[in-house]
Each structure stands twice: as structure tokens, then as C-alpha cells.
Length: 619
Image 1 (tube, helix red, strand yellow):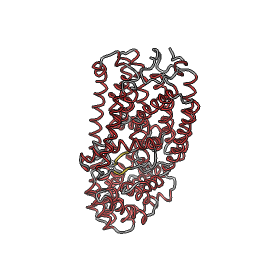
Image 2 (cartoon, one colour; image 1 turned 135 degrees about the horizontal axis):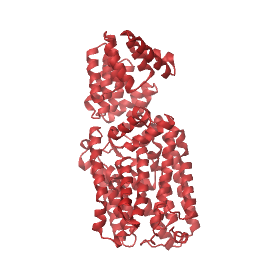
Image 3 (cartoon, rainbow, N blue to C red; image 1 turned 60 degrees about the vertical axis):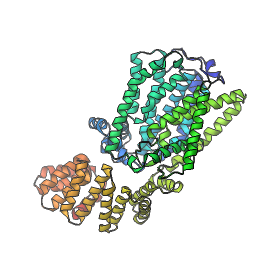
């Protein structure tokens, strides 16, 4: 049976148990109001995020996830599916995220608008599902719609939606909210089939991003309010009920830790536990501040090496005070406890007690936790407004003003993600001592050919953090292109000493190999290329470099082997042209002609392809 429209419209000022929805289907309609509000939520989201379709990919993880990832670029093939479930690249096991990117490449190739719009559609659908879930479990339509609207257009969520590589957050949240709807369905008539569907959706969420590891505890909060299951069933049984989900969370956490350690993403040793704990306490308060006033949003927030004791003490006092107040009011206003602990608990995996990455905080981390804050604030304000008989007209105007301001800020924030240069220029303008932003801007300027300007940013990055391997690696690239080979080698070797990330070490080995090859020091070049291949057996640059060395040292047969492996790993016009020439040298003319034909077919500018290969052979 559907929830009567009159029940939805009559929103009591009490924070106590809402009227219980009747047993019904998974997506029972709640009438025209629900349909209209769902449509308005969708339109609001699409309008707010429409500018993202004009954005490019950025160099911040997008190459690793999409543009330079050969498995993803191949589309949804059987090999890609197998790789997605085996891969722990980027320090995570998230096969569904990889597959979603592969599907986009299948449909849109490397046109960023398609990739971005799929994410926006997922975000809009998630907002609608969140509204439907909250309305179904509380019977309050307008409050639920406002929570979903805040989720849809809050500027802190721009990073998750406008950043192509962060598809994992949006996909994870989609499965999470869908799981909540199914969980509500399960609680109406518990049985193993419905529970299995809950577990399946939970697994899909974890396979998108392991952010959901605290969900079993969140479900206990929802059992307390608004589902009110604790009044009918013992806490002990409700806890036992969550144990299979908890086991899945533990398994996901273990896999994630293994993947992050293997990928060099764990940086707990770079900061003392005291430092990490202090930053976690202050970050909670900073997140709340940005929820209220979302200003100075950056793509990377440097981790503070030392926080003032007074700042940590005030932040801790604030958190303890809010928690105490919430607990004291929990008997009459249960939503306060649920919303507050949803926020606190949702951030636990990423608050930095175990430091993954080098950031102090990140906007993308609040994509799920902020829903708890929005819920608590909207319900509390609605109760206050009802008690003080605030006119519905004034409430509607206030809501429109708030949503309009947030949507305008979101529109502006999306513009900073327009391209790599605008992203890092904005970050540098609002943060201090940000060596990651300096290094990233330097790398972008190298790509644009502005070597001298790039050097300034990279040297600034090294000055801030002399142990940053990224700045050292790109400084080496600049030095090599400027003809300062000795300085390039020095920076590459420094990057190699400092780097723990396997992909970064591989890049340093490849670059050293290329420098030594250009100096005709083939022995050292070969050793470095082989070291790169020990990290990744199909590294195309290393394979091509070894092929060039073999060809120049009179071993074209071995060159054929290396070029063949490179062309198989990453088919390109240059690789096939190199292979064709090596095959011709060993007398395999028919195969040479076939490779030559593939090179011509793949090339968009044959003269440039020939010039590039000639340059490689003469270097």
C-alpha cells in the first residue's frame, strides 16, 4: 500500500517516531508530489552541473584511470573484465569502477563530455533515490526533498562529480542509497532473499569504493531511527543480523590495506600518530565549517605538520560538546543522534588515522557523511519552524535562496575543474605551502612546453618538501629537455631514492634509461629499462627503449621481440612502424608489410609518425 498523501503532508514538529509506512513494494509511488519533487531534484542537479560537459580530463589521476589506461580504453572486453577484478592499481580494489570507465570508453571513447555526463546522471539519480528513501522511512516529503537537494547541489560534492577519476565515489553512493531502499524493504518482512539483495548491493558498493566499510554501524543507527526497530527487537539480534555485512566490511578493509601498501599509498610513517589524531580532530570541524560556508575549496589540502595546541583543544571541545548535546536530546529528537553519528562514523575510514595519501583532508570524503549532517540540520530546523509557526511561504523562499546560492557556487566550482591548468592555478591561489599543487602545475606546464615557468613551480615544490619525488622527477624532465643531462640524471636518481610508489619508481627507471640511451651508454640504459620491466612487465617505454638499443647494437631479431611486446601492450602507429623496420632487417618481409600497413592505418599524421620514428632511431 502506498503512503497516503495526507500522511506525507502532515509533518509533525515532534522528533519522535514517525507514523509507520505500510508494507509495500520496493518502489511504491507516493503520489504526484513524489513524482514532481523527484523531477525537480533531477532538473536542479542537471542544471547545476551542466557546465561540467565542457570540461576536459585533468592530469590529476584521470590518465591512470582513463586516458592512459590501456585496459580501460579497450572498452568492455573479456580481458578488461578479468583485469578489473585482479587489479589493485591506484591503491584500491574497485572492479566496478574500472568497468564503469571501460563502458564509457566503449560508448564515448576519450570524449570527456560523455564521461562527465554519465557521472552527473548517476549523481542526479542518487539524489532522487535518497529523497525516496527518506520519505519512505519518515513520511516527510519536503524535509526529505531538502536533504536530497542539499546533497545534489552542495559545492563540496563538486570534486566527486566533476572529477572524472572520482567516479568511484558517485558509483559507490548510488549502490549505497539503493541498498538503503532495499534494506527498508527487508525490514518490513525479513527473509533471507531480501537480506541477500541487501548484501549484494552492499558488495557492489564496496567494489566501487571501500568507503562503505562503516555501513553495518550506520544500519544500526537507522534501526534506532527512523525505522524504530529497536522498540520491537533486541539490540543483540539487530547486531547479529549485521555480522555478515560486517564480515564483508572487514574483508574489504584488509584488501584495501594490502592494495594501498602495495601501491605505496600508505603514508602513516610520514606523520606521527599524534599528528594524525590532531589533524583528524581539526578536520572534523573544518568539514562542518565548509558544510556551512563552502569557501576556498581546493583539489588538494596539504597535511599540516604541526597544529597549534589551542586549535586542537577548541576543536575537540566543540566535538565533545555537540556529541554530549546530541546524546542528551536523543530521547526526544532521535534524528540528531542518527545524523551526527552518520557524519562522524562515515568519515572514520578517511579521516586520516591511517594516512592514505598525503592530503590533510579532501572534499570528496564528505560525499556520503554530509548526508547525516544535512538530515540532522533539516529535521531540527523544521521542528523549530513548526513550533514557532513559521509560514510555509517564508520557509520555501528561504530554501530557494539557500539552494540557489549553493547551486551558483557549485557552478563556479565546476569552472575550476575546466582543465588541469585552471584546477591547479585555483588551488595555488587559496592554499599555502602546497608542494603537490606546485608539482602538478609544473608537470602541466611541461606538457604545454613552458619549461622555464615549469621549473619555477617544481623548484618551489622541492623547497617546500625536499623529499617529494614527483617534483624531482619532473625537474629531471625539464633539465633533460633543456640539455642539462647531468642535472637530469641527478634528479631522476633523487626521485628513485625518495619514491615508494611503484609507478613512480618505474617512471624514474624509464627516464634514466632514456637519458643513458641518448648518451650511448647502452649498458646502464638497459639495466634501468629492465628495472622498469621488473615493476611492470609490459611497460611500453622500457620495451621500446630496449628495442631501440637492440637495433642500434646490431641485434634486430631481439628488437623485433621487444617491439612486438610493446605493440601488443599498447598498439600505436610508431610501435608498428618500428616493428616493420626491424622485421624488414631480419628478412621477414611479409610480416613487415603487415606491420607497416597497421602503422599507416592507425596514423592520423603519417609524416609526423615517420619523423617521430626517425628521431627515436637517431637519438
